[in-house]
Length: 505
Image 1 (cartoon, helix red, strand yellow):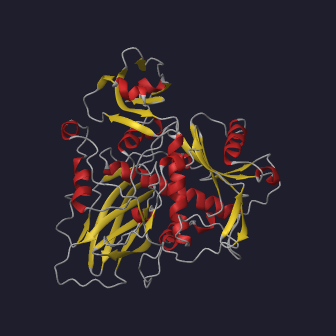
Image 2 (cartoon, one colour):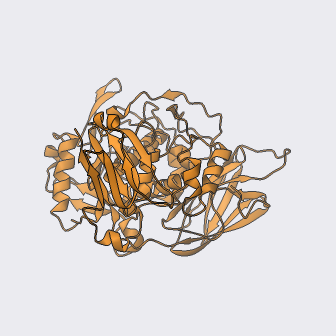
Image 3 (cartoon, one colour):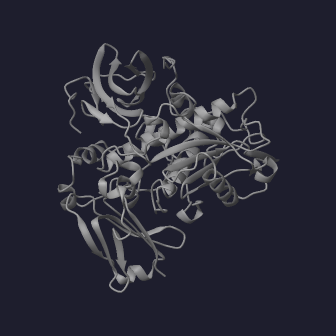
């Protein structure tokens, strides 16, 4: 990607000058443009300053990634490496939308609200809310960056507190369910109970997606590294994504803690704590896996099914690589064999400058995914709105495989979803006939333009899909009969974010 900074010794790779973004934590990727005699030392860092807040980030193989916390309005961000400096101007402007994501910390009626954590850790209600709110912001950032890489711009959902500073970043929700009852319930039962309870509470709204965490999750060791977890869920759909808090202690509560948390190689003691790290066994891997799982389940609330690859499969365990600079030869020593059917659908910022920089979060998991298969054919992309070809070229030329992406149909579904766009006059008064399907002729019609079509199996797995992201609208599409006969459900979305979901067989 050609940027305005290519003449500089510090080069920003994924952002252009004077861009506007709609979320508060920005991922900045770049590299050091040095000659062949440049010698990288293990503790080489780049320092970032924004509004008198400073942070330091590792330089690995001449590349760096930084997370910058933005203030509303204009941000002048300064990057410094040794004596070299550049400035990047970014405007943060929250979208004004009736649709939002609302983080919740759910406390059962006879529980004190303290989540399970190592001794002497801060497991208070306030710290739980801080961790959940920051996790939501990281998923918001990741979603924007991954859609950008696929040519849709930095679209993402809005958190309720983005544009309404009078509401908390994470609500505390006091449930009428007892702890003892919660510990006897399966995750589907918990999801159903809390979904109904939330929708009969003062927080009820069809314009909210709830990102909920249950405070009373408890890991009980059975010895030998085995155990059972109670009052736990990892289930999303409809308006609620619900999770347990067995690994919440591994999450950061402040931006300056994100890097150390991902790099935390402390071994999980399963005599006392839950290990949800995809067999990697460290706090950092637990943070990566559970943040990725939260992203996956939140995706279901945005009407995503399961995919054969990517975040909506099991391609979320390596989410730390999205945010960390890493060596391209990092070994892929942990192989994941899960298939989509196995996944429940159901102040001043400053890091220690002498931090020993090495990615000790554990080896990433090799999902054997081809990350560089073009997502849209060339003819379609030439008609696309905006000049987003640059970000596709950037990704392919840089050959960065962070093992985390949305599948093509998932990316399209999100890009045109109502939670990701400003409402138009058409979407304010949606018509039931905006999308229709003729079963006799197998023809889908969308008067506002069809954007994505999926055929799904009875387990929610996407079997076949078609995407139409270009400026030229596709108002009709013939779906091959043999594909329809093999599917259970048809799901489609139009330009306005209207959805049709039909049972086929």
